[in-house]
Length: 170
Image (cartoon, rainbow, N blue to C red; front, side, top):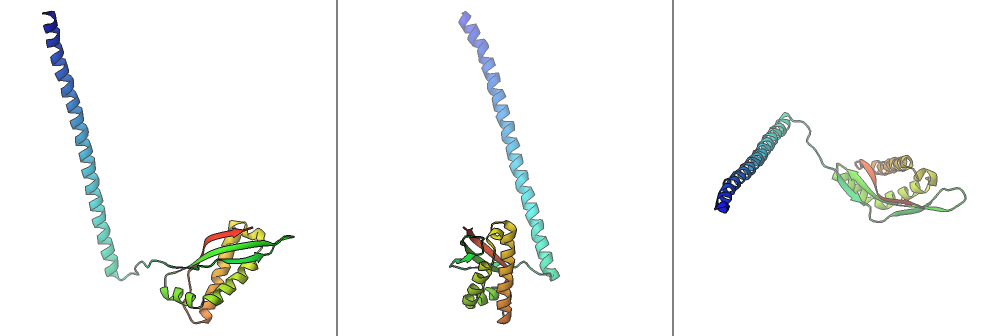
């Protein structure tokens, strides 16, 4: 009989723990559902507001966003560079960036002349300058000026940037 009374006492304790676990799981599930619902509502409200802002800009006649277009130069520019006492080499894979696709078509058309002038600009650079980020930025600026000078002489639109896809000096 003693076993029956202790088993009977454990039964309500187990039911109480089970109810507590069910209650906690329900509260956590409700909190997750509210969090997800609130996030979706907030994102939907924010994106709808963003669309209204885009529509307002378009109706106001302001300039729209124009993505850049790129022209990778397939062959690397390879030449010797100025160094003290040793012969050093530089290799650069380039890409041209422009907002106007006509500028890149013109650059493709005049690529032999552009390539020749860019190799000359790279060859006139100093090995010690090319080893620094500032020197490479200066070279990119020089190359941009060179490309745009050629395009301007040919009556074509200018490119916006000369980008290094890969650059090695040794």
